[in-house]
Image 1 (cartoon, rainbow, N blue to C red):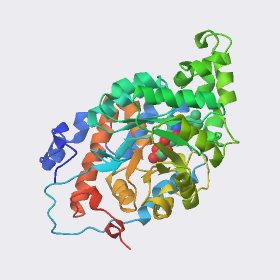
Image 2: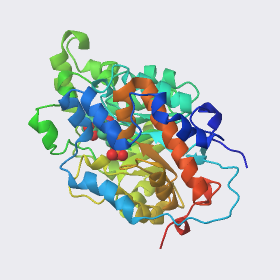
Image 3: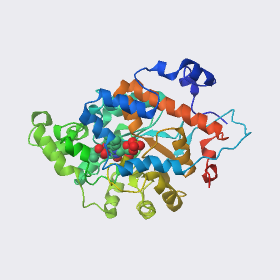
Length: 394
Ligand SMILES: Cc1cc2nc3c(=O)[nH]c(=O)nc-3n(C[C@H](O)[C@H](O)[C@H](O)COP(=O)(O)O)c2cc1C
Ligand SMILES: CC(C)CC(=O)C(=O)O
């Protein structure tokens, strides 16, 4: 068996020198990035303006966000002993392509509020560790520019499906032309939820024109403006808010989107098994089980609790990915044991970006990979593909 995550990419942290991790102290590698997730978030809170910090940290209320974490504790790994774990394989096959690990970068909008490098820095970090990146529609740099930074690493494009079909087609076809390998359509954000943290500070970065690079670089979007975007930002924001929300969309509309691109389409924000079946019937290639990190429906089911139901409904026929609450290696193993093909990393990389830009994101991903690998070995497994529900306590 070949080891697909090459630890040689992080020899000073890891590899066959695990004792070295402790001797050296990972903190010394990047002092501005604390090791524990909570400390990393606390450091990000110190460096970010309060409104930006809360935009990332906040949810629609607090309980679903908390449940995304506490629900993980109800699933417990059941380690096995005396198996040969000298060679380990962290690879996963997603949409028919082998990835070196199960990690993907989740689509996070307006990264310029976190760090000047924004999506360009994240793409460079993703490329350094070969973790595929999903780029948000509401990004701070145009999708073509971000794609270039990824080099040979896979990129997927996340579509916020506008109410204008011509604009949707234009965005999707630009993504296809730029070399993105799949389209992710986010379903759970037909409108922004009641988010007290942002309402409190009257903070919505898009209303200041942030995160609109994919729109202002789009010919169809610009055709709806009287002046070039740089000459009238207020008109850009007004037009954006007119096209962004599409509350009337239903499953029937997917056929037009399916016809607009040859790329595989993955629906993000699916929690109900019957919606996963509808996705399959509509010719979709995968679903992402997610509650948007607790940012949309306060009181919703914890995402990890929705995973097994969706896997049982469609897992044999389409890819099922997962996000919302992944913070450490054990979380990744649990999601895979429950049937996820891959997992998306959200807020952890945002804190890495806030604390140390590209280097911070890279470090977050490397640490997570090291933790996944160690947890895999210590549970007696030599490959993530070998995990199943028997890897969890009954
Ligand atoms: C600041 C922020 C911005 C986000 N922007 C988007 C977005 O543009 N498109 C999207 O599909 N999801 C977006 N999400 C949701 C993430 O893709 C992902 O579902 C979520 O972060 C998972 O939760 P976790 O980060 O707590 O693990 C955003 C999340 C955050 C925190
Ligand atoms: C434009 C948005 C709705 C961005 C987003 O997905 C989020 O803030 O959660």
